[in-house]
Length: 353
Image 1 (cartoon, rainbow, N blue to C red):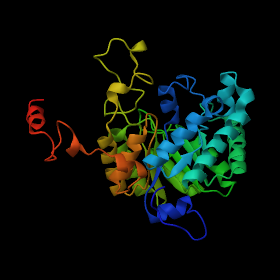
Image 2: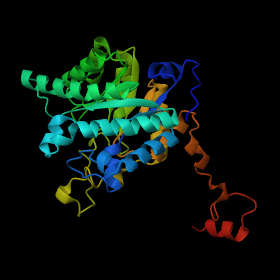
Image 3: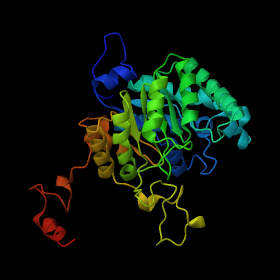
Image 4: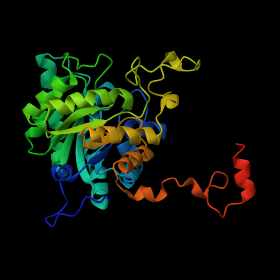
């Protein structure tokens, strides 16, 4: 449990916590479950919540242990159209309700916030038919989230600003707080051509409580977007990058290329050969400090995140999650340590390493 104080009336809600300081949210369940061998890359459908619920429960616990204030139900891509594409539509309600129950149980156990989750549909194309279809899908998932008793709802990874606005409108109908984040691709705008600042301003005007960006971009190429967003809106701002070293020429993790590797299928590292581009924990901590100094207070890490990344973000903000008990202390290392009790011979040998 993180130290955000106690509310005599019960658990502090999202907006109360943000009023007091930063809120951390761990995302990235798709990639982490795929790495652990419980989810298929490509389809990226969260059937794992049915097949191995213990894996998801433990991952929720690990993220909270590392500093996440939020247990986010693993319902990313668990919408009707995605499941229909992989012949799993009959599992739609079961997957959603199971994912929500797993998250709720861990949130209660750890005194964390319990969040529902809506995601990009890859169905929306800006016409009336796709507007109707995505609204129906969001209403289904939001209904199950409300039934489960979520504290707030996240709507994430939207390439279309208008699709994000539809998700927000559905969330507003529940009366629950909302976090709405955009995925900014190579051209630096939404697919309608809105700048991230303009899109976030529209979301604020429509009633979003927290707006910002998540996924797609790593720390280096997400940071430049944040100041313009912070300057454009007066609500809380969110930033959840992927932990990969994107850069000016390759600003998204889909665009990363490794010219020295000859064994990657199709010469495309995304999504299964991104390992050489992975940020270390200190880079994520530096990102968190810089973003927080800009006024970004809802922070986390998206696809590719592991608990040590979340701990680094927490510690960079001066927080002390339970996992900090095990943060590195090289002073006791057999060869590289500085403790006077270490053997002098080993310390001398270390100087030659």
